[in-house]
Length: 479
Image (cartoon, rainbow, N blue to C red; front, side, top):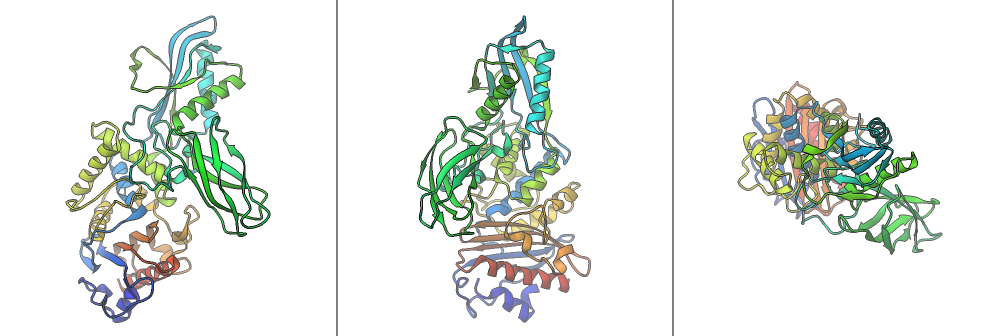
C-alpha cells in the first residue's frame, strides 16, 4: 500500500474514481509490499467516489460477518427469536418418569449468554423447566437428561480454521444447543518471575473429565493474555501453551467448551439433583428424533435477532455468526450444515448486487484465511443494505467511535473527532490483515459506504488505523 492514503489526500485525488496512481512512487516500511483494496460509494446512488484495486481478491477477516448478519435480519426479521424446547418421553407414575427428558436445541446463540441483551438466564430457565416437571408429576427421572443438537449437521468447524485458534473461546463450535456462549474460563496462577511455570487452578464452570497438558509460562507484567488452548470439539484433553502475565494472584483465559450440548444436559441434571429430582445420567442424541409421541414440557425463547446481531458485530463474536449461517441453510429448506449455509448466503449476496463469480467463502465469521472478497462488491452490498427495512437495526450493530459496547482497537478509531457522530464501522483483523467497512454520514448530508481491505502489511496496526481515520475524516469533510 505504501504511503498511499496520505499522499492521496494531499494530492486531492483520493476522490477520483480511478485506480491509484501512486504505488510505485512512495513507499513506507511495512506497507510497501502490502495489497490494498479500497471502495467508497454514495449509498443512495451507488456512484463510485474512490477506488483503489477495488476488484482485487483479498482476505476480509471479520468484516465477513456483515454478510451473514444482514442475510439473517432479512430472512427472519429483527424481532425473530430462536427457541429451546423441553420434552419428556415415557410414562409417569407415583412421581417416577420411566423415560427421559429431552432438551431440544433450536439454534439459539443467546441461551445463557452474558453478552446479549435480553438473553435467557440459565438458572431462571432451569427453574421454569423444573416447575414444569413438578407440574407433570415428576420427582424422579429413571432415564437420562438427553441433549438434542441434531438441528445442525455436518462438521462442527471449518477445516481451514487455524490449529492455534481451535480450543479457544473465539473458535467455539456452533451447536444447535449452545449455552453460556459455549465458553469456560480457565484460571492460572502465574509464577513469581518471568519464565516460571503458570499452574492451572480451576475452570468456571467446572467441566468434569477435562484434562490439561500444561506448558504455560509466566510473561512480563501487564503483558495480557498470550495463552492458547489446543484441543478439538468433543475432545476432553487440551494442551496449554503461551504466557499469562506475572503480578495477579490468578489470571483467567477463555476456552471453548468441548461439547456444548452435553454440557447443557449435565448442567440441568445437576440443577435438578440439587433440588431433589435425581436422574439416570446424561446423554446426547446422535440422530434426529421423532417427537410425535413425546410430551411437550416447556419452552425458552431466546433474545431478539436484532440483539444477537448487535453483539455479533459490535464484539465480532464468531460463534453467533456461524450459528446464524446454519439457520440460513434451514431457511433455504436444506440441512443445517455449514456448506448449505454458505450456499444460501452466496445466493443472498448475488441477489443483493454482488458479483460472486470469484467470491471464496469458507466460513461466515471471517476466521478463515481462505475467504476472498473484493472491496467493490462489499460496498455494493452495503449500499443495497442501506435501502432495506431492517437497516436501522443493522447500522446500530456497527461500532461508533468510543463505543462502550465494542471491544478492541476499532472503538478508538475516530474518537474525539468529527467521526464520532457520523461513523458506523466494522473491522476485521488477522495476522497481516486489516479490514474496515461501514457507513459514513458526511458534512454535506450524504451517506457513503466504504470498504478497505489491507493484506500482507508488516507495519504497526495502530499506524493503519491512523491512516484510515485520516481518510474517513477527509471523506466526511469533502462530501
